[in-house]
Image (tube, rainbow, N blue to C red; front, side, top):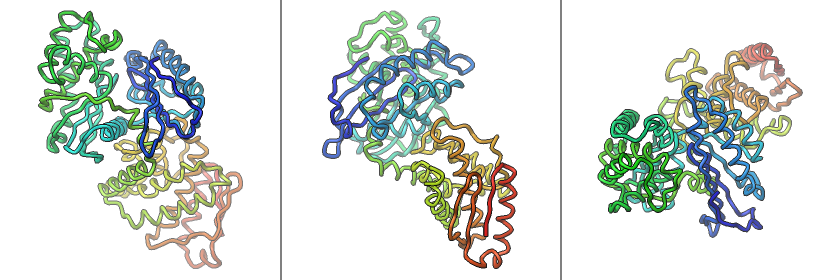
Length: 497
């Protein structure tokens, strides 16, 4: 493990980011000094999780064990820090592995901190955040990060993101797929073509925006930049990549370049093929290396909590605009959902983090209406589950999808989308019940009758309205009776008066 010593006596002012990548695990420890991040320590271990992903998308036992043993060592550094000061993110391999839940459960038991599996787009966004805080990005900037199992591309200017994508190609996976039998010209041709095919859907979108500079981050970029310099090039270019390809074909991995470890050499061919495909597809003249990467982006996000909230709000508003959501109706539902949540937080022991998610779900519950008014809840859930939602990790996205999926009609608990450890099923179901009532009270779409009080006792929720409200509003009374019947089928009870 690479590291520097650190005095953790003042751990309350220290932030820790741990990135469980497909090739390496990285930890960065920093403190806040006059509003800026000061890096105190870095720790890195080569784990090569992606190399252990078999044809059935399961992590083999060797990779599983390598990962857990590495986390045991990282845990020694995590001990002084509270959960509020630590964020652990997992990327491509743990997004794809069918047995990722088993690994994550054991990982969290070792670390005593939650692990977030982030989407490819969220990974790309955080990478751009790191680079835009570390480099001059006054000109439009294309950022490339070739990881072990995926490659993230981000295009932005200053701190504004313009385009994001994540492609399933990485230095470990491509080396395993194309160079297992040696590094040859034919293998490079096949690997580069495969990478170009994965890039094809995004080339036009990125190229139409354009860029003034290209930066690359992480291990593959660092190695390619070192090789370029060794061979007399000032930056990563098409020529430097061709020269390195010739060298690898001639020497295989038996080359000695300062700053490149033996472990990096073992996966360099796959990373080189991916980078060559990107340079060719986007007609890039030169690429500079940036030391900023995902873990620094995570730290900046932790430091700028309000900015993270703004990212989520912009994501929500973008989705609402795209699917023509009635913003006034969405706000009404959100107001009631938030009121109910505040009344029930204590008796139901709702985690504070769930307020933000039920608010977003209330605003987004009708995104599926733009597709069809029939089975709107199914359409809404599909959109939220399968869209790229910057600012939300995978579990948070699945919570939102579950909430909108069951905001009306039958509450079919056996059809809940599985989440990892963000919320237990009991909490998720309670949030669903809150959203259902908030939607029901706004079915008239002209304002709502907010109950005077709400109480819970076991599986029963009781709503108390002002005198004669239900006598005067027969439709509301009928809607509540129907909801009580639907909840009873799921094992819950709703009373009202």
